[in-house]
Length: 483
Image 1 (cartoon, rainbow, N blue to C red):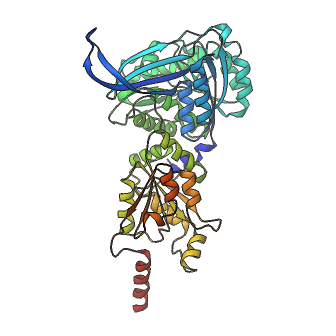
Image 2 (spheres, helix red, strand yellow):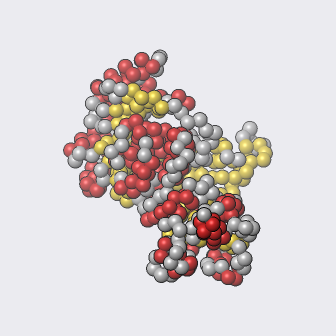
Image 3 (cartoon, rainbow, N blue to C red):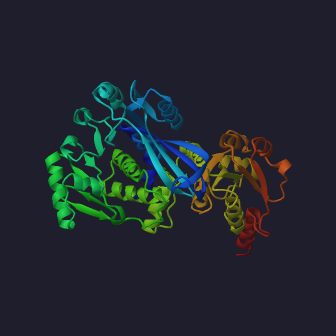
């Protein structure tokens, strides 16, 4: 698989339709058992609200850079308002129908010491009156997307799913289904369906052995007029099954923290890959890797293009490959990392000839936070600063070397407009830690004043003695003269 596909994720467009939920997390410590009952007492220290259900599928798609919209039902209540606000914040287009007499579906989880203590569900199944406006909203949104995901949690939003699928196929859309109904014929006409083993068995699938799985899966697909099944099999991985082939993908063994939302991540990744015309096998391979990543995170979390690309590179043992997201997406990726609680470190420089001093410096810089961003002078900027004989290596080659380093997360150019300081870039990124190397003082570092005013930190890291690009170039010249 060519990892350049991750640079194309921003070209995919996906519409999600289904049961929208609010996932509320209450987090705290637990150090004693209640005297009233044999249950832990959790002292709540923090509350977090996240998009859940179909909205979590949309959130996964958006965090993977694709354009995404969502159609669904919420209550005319505070939790519904929170969902609408979060969709706006995440950049997810939405066509929300507000039920006047049903609450927004909400799942409250109490978490202590990274363990879920209890989950409380607040919900009432939507009825025919609630879903009556859904088709009109769907038709309004549909022309703007190439691919449709129906995320069915059996809460009533998709009670008329057969008609929705027919409309999507009438407009030549690729349709994926995350099912909850035991009768798969309700999803007739879909291109791809993603049941887990439990859902597969409820639909009539046989799991006695591999032959039984294949035979019963093909029978279910034929009866429902569905092209392909991605069967998720927990620790056994996944299987892509259609009328002619079956491809098995082994599970990516990682330390499992929480399986919440893993199915959402799988179908979100599949939808983007299929929207870009990728094969079923390649799409399932990437979705399998995404599932392996997301289960290591607590709660309904997301996967980034950087994490996926790194997983693909690791799997293929292609250590010469690297991934750098398109420049227009980088600032958004940085902001997403910040929202996830990660510390952003920034440094800048020419990095014309990469040497041991640079490696040591960048590793020390990365150790000050979670993510390291490098502002890299453009070629024109270096010529203005260093003279017409520089740079030795053009920007693309310098960026390639830097992004191949484990310490570096993103490289962003600056200096094209004739301003050779990174101040504007620093103001855009708003790093938590600003780093410079050498004999700088904090007072002389560009952006230090602004960073400190925001509550950030400024650090100076000493360079390794005897390592510098200028000295390296001079040694090369002297060697060439002697020869």
